[in-house]
Image 1: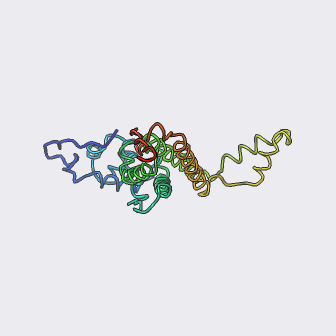
Image 2 (image 1 turned 30 degrees about the vertical axis):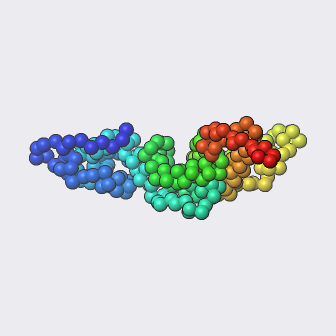
Image 3 (image 1 turned 180 degrees about the horizontal axis):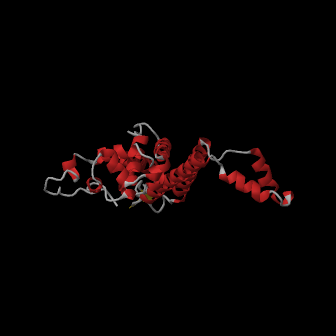
Length: 255
């Protein structure tokens, strides 16, 4: 549930809402000083020196408070993302992906409380528009642009989840599981996986994110090229936004 603002209750009691001098900023600041794994509404109230009902006046429950903390940390993780005017759609995607991923990782243990809704994407609406504009200008139709942006965003979520898991546990899970599954089996039957595991490639490092972004870009480029090649200029001319325009008649020789 989102934090709510209610009309202050009249009376002399100082434990409610604005009469206690509280606002969301103060509550979040106080909550940030506490261990999030054991965070409670009462602990925040105690830290602020107010009745718990004063905190509840602004934040309904613990989960809402954790989400507010996560959003605050996320927003500070990559402030002011800007796409340079001269950037290509590929470079715009790289800038967006790096910034979005860094913001997710900055949330650390609070990342699990982030939800993919408007409050999360607000600070990235300008770079998303910049990507859509450049992809449209490059020849993507609207569906291709929005599906590509969704795929890129999901890629960021997946990498951030992996990076946070390693940061918390100190364990690279995929190599260990693969090694355990290959050991004790016929090596010839799994010679490729056995060889790869022995190389101990770190698929949780930043190179993995960079590779994922580049594969995404190469794939999007290939799809765009295929789309352009399959459009028959003899029958139609497809505009950048995917709307069909009649092809101008070809002039006959001599007039």
